[in-house]
Amino acid sequence: MAILSILQYPDPRLHKVAAPVTAFDDRLRSLVADMAETMYAAPGVGLAATQVDRHVQVIVADVSEKHDRLLVLVNPQIVEGSGVSTLEEGCLSVPDIYDTVPRYERIRFRACDARGATFEQEAQGLLAVCIQHEMDHLKGRVFVEYLSRLKQTRIAARMRKQQRRAM
Ligand code: K1U
Ligand code: ZN
Image (cartoon, protein in one colour):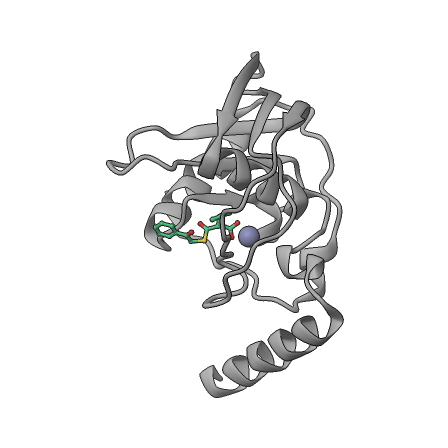
């Protein structure tokens, strides 16, 4: 397993649209294992393949306190959504920025696991928001893009400054 590097906003690669997975093979399972290790190490509660510069529809998430409930979503789809969430979200690609964006409070989603078996499940609260956030990453959308132009400009400037300092 390996810890992968996470793309930082405003990297243009965060805007690539992920392709559906067609081969449920060892290469996919190795990507899933590396993504899980990267998410736990960050630490985060979710991670989309886009964030590690792999443009396929793969998400890992674990909102449990003990980090013992890893969810792997391949080719995810939201089947139903209801309610309005008021949770603040963060993003490993935009460190230290937290805000609320429009999300369902509860969702029903369908996905494949790493072996290609389809499953359907319900989620609410943080897990529901996290899955919607990660599915946006797969579409090339970063949560700060829901915020005002002014906030986006300030965030991009702050991130570029941080990145220059880290060089
Ligand atoms: O996609 C990502 O960048 C991961 C992101 C997921 C997320 C969190 C909260 C709401 C929506 C989506 C994160 O994991 S940010 C880090 C974080 O929230 C966290 C880190 C450690 C413990 C608990 C939460
Ligand atoms: Zn994110």
